[in-house]
Length: 82
Image (cartoon, rainbow, N blue to C red; front, side, top):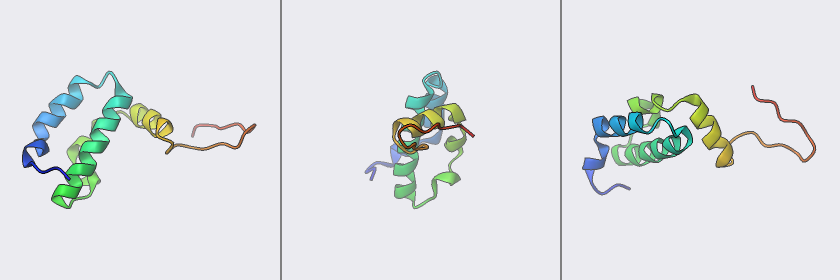
């Protein structure tokens, strides 16, 4: 867990997110890590954070696929995006 509450500075995180939105997948990873650590520190659910709405859905979709959290396919099958 984060030993310092200074990292829970919401305006700072929102400024950083807006500054790096061009690289959506990397930003999704950063916001995801921040929300997990912050939620553990404050004993909150990640959905309670305003920052969770800043990452575009395309970035989260790409991040989930890269991290193996997205749809899986059997060899030779066709995967369709919903």
